[in-house]
Length: 306
Length: 306
Image 1: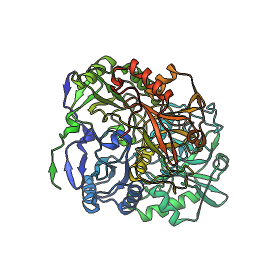
Image 2 (image 1 turned 60 degrees about the vertical axis):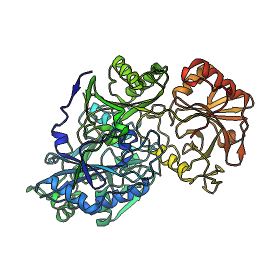
Image 3 (image 1 turned 135 degrees about the vertical axis):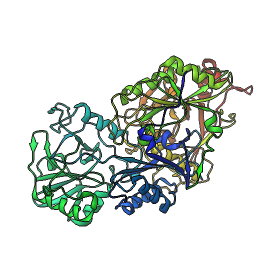
Image 4 (image 1 turned 30 degrees about the horizontal axis):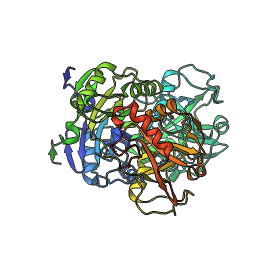
């Protein structure tokens, strides 16, 4: 076969690879992240050359590394490298941490040095409207040993997100896939194999029933998002099992993550919602706490998920 | 940080990387296998420079790629490259197939070119004895959307295999972790979160109750191994849910995979088994069908899993 060396595209030009504390040029082919998804990641929103929620992301990474039993790289140089990537500007920085190299076989090597990749990505486009979501057919399996952490075994999310992209969705939430399919959804809501609502493919979910916020428990599947954790500290929110009916009958539903912030759902199948003052209040609280989520001049309001 | 370029170790020297039909030098940092375990793999035993079960492995890869909705590379050059790696000798060839590059986010790119890696590994050491196994505490979650295929989301197996290595096992199978722990186990048996027995961390399981073979159904979790598929064609085997009690009370238990062949279990907690003639018969059938599994001069018998 012919050989090609033209791999330095825009993506890899904005990426740096390390093994332990040492910068390296390429990911070795025996990397366990590549072989088994044996790794963790964090996606951080940066503003003005800094990552305001670094500590929060690093704590979750630390918790994940303890659960998967592998070491972290040194924190101070990791943060310095991550913020250098921003070059004084705004953007998204992804930190992908793998267990490093290993032989063939699942047995984790006892003294692997972690291999980690930092990459810079553009901010999502500016927010303008409520987000339309759908019920995904792909379910989240129940695995308490992996619940909560942001590990790299994400095929369930990949399959679910592909449904949103292709319009193969179940808009009416009854699981038979015959629901409304107008192609306008930009995120998918995911249920566990038990039927309870867990999250969106790339966001946590908060639901306002009456005047009480609740959010799904992340004890059997799903990721404990950093924005979710921050909101739990700001507002009275009950963590519980949430049903499809509780979502569809809610006064407001929001999706939250560390890159997009707080997004109100405007439509789910036949149900639609107008902007809700309780969501605007959440957005104001966030804007005052985090420089990256400063509200646009038109005032507080939900953002579009593109 | 300091830079290093010394990545060409023994592992990567025996590996070749391709994008589509073109050989490339490095795995790009935006590879989705690395990010999400968004890939598939095959581990093939080669003998005398050929891969006798290539078709079987390729068929499973094809099935997996259909389920995950990404294209395969061209088969003929892939096989030629894989067999070239054997250089006329014996060995294990691993084919790792990823969806290729993608931006940040779970959405699979519509036209990604698959990136795949071939690597050569030594054969396992010669077989001499029965294998000792333990019950793993880590369970397999129920996910019909991913059951059967050999995808790269393998953190459950990694955690389970780490239990075997560290001796943190549950030898008596009651799930409380207080079982026998003499450190001699070389594989771990895995149950689903429902409690039924599914497989070993890197092998399928066959159980002889009375004079009838059975093997766990692979409809909710686990991998449909190529050796398992071959055995189902040779011998009358019932596919069913298998309980812990049915394993522990069996007349014989065997582990099978495409690299090791057929391995009889000699010990599981307090239970021990002598070599069983029905297993020797299976080994003879395999030896006559597959040149890589020719029996040693001492005659048919179970091999040791190291």
